Length: 338
Image (cartoon, rainbow, N blue to C red):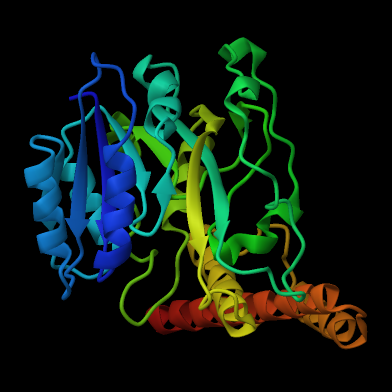
């Protein structure tokens, strides 16, 4: 088997149908053998019946796997262990993929030149964006296929850093532009692929990260990607591998954005630790975080315009999450030392 698409799902049988319909229409060369492995993470809806129907409609293409241990990372690791493909592609249960997505995402990996690849995750708007929504780089139209180019590794351009593109992170969007190139940061979990050998070499997804009942701590996907980059592995950005993520009304709420960024800040500290250059601390918390909290609170209060004001408020919630997680880890270390 050349490719296994791993899709983990939990109680989303309705959106799962649309996701599976889209991946079933994938255009792949006849010489490439591929499968879709759906990992049911202890759902209580009609998920099993939905997947069973696809298994009947597309014999040999879809497989169903039940993982009782709650938590997305448990489901991902189970899928990796059971996957038959040499290349593992990942998608979510609430997205819609383009017919060329799988081929474009995995073509270079099948040649064995790369460790991993990530594509674009674009918004599927159901309503107009609210005025308070942070401004970022996620409003580009899908890349025209004729403009998507491929390069040899020696020709790889570097994808430029741009912190603004993370403004819409809570909407699970990832867009580094129209140019293919070498990734210097990890892709997002709903549109990425890796050589299966990378999981044998670097281990699976961390089970203390990733959404699970009672916790929205994420970062399991980017933490794994960072492990590969730290190990010197080569990751590629392929803009023609496109996934559409629906922007649902429940995500277009300020409360959701703030909770997401608060949890993201905690996850970053949990996954990567406190930045080493921040040496002045109080109760395990870098003093710079307290200074930043004061500065961004003042900017939040004084900012003009709903988008700028809310962006500053997000920074306050980020710092609050960092402070909480630093304190929590310091207390945990202190208890273990006693």
